Length: 331
Image (cartoon, helix red, strand yellow):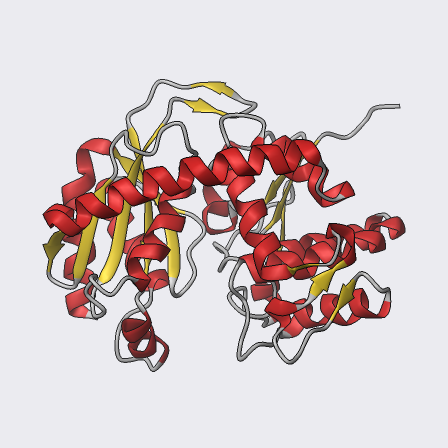
């Protein structure tokens, strides 16, 4: 018989579901498993599975990993052996409130503890240990897996990360992590030194920079990790949004080469400003970033209240910052 073709987007595309629906082949099924606030779309060939549609917060109640686990276990019951990955994804996404998890994240934790995959330590879930990974604490594991996928994106990092999630860390993973950790530390230290010497540009309530080619060959998720580091730095303005840009290489791992000149944009919010945002006294990134992208012909995907990502034409970088700064002042 005829086999159905299904295209799956995981942890992305929800905010651009209408564009996906317009481009998707109507003879196939497109499944969007995402926890970011979704674009409203009703098309028979595009299915959205999103906690926001059920009244749950994609910021705090359900990580992409917890969502994938909940969906997968209903298709393949044996997926329950990966319940600990639902917990690990929540830690990697920073969905911890006062040392605890909420919503579907908390349900994954309860199941993982009951199955013996996770052991609670003290009263902070970030310290919980994972038996699949030789009893290592979750926060450290999440950082290592992020490093494999981001710093090692244009090499074997993603494949090793998937293998590690299935079977734990082996010598290949440890060796690669050692190399990637050294590369990340060297590139981050050099860029931080440059920023501290006047490399940060300012416009209104926005502080921004472009790493240009300094992060190559690391993947573009690296600029988001670095922005988080800048947002926490004592030398950064605690009252201004942090924006970092990195050139998007003309190759998508596993898909091929493309002729484009784009910038990956990452935005983070320092702690002091985050308190203003959460109290409703300053606009959050779900308000600011899509609006600024609309001005320059870019698109936002992966927006949370305090962390966001976007893609824009390289030639519009300054116009994007201007639009973002205007929106921040109006907010």
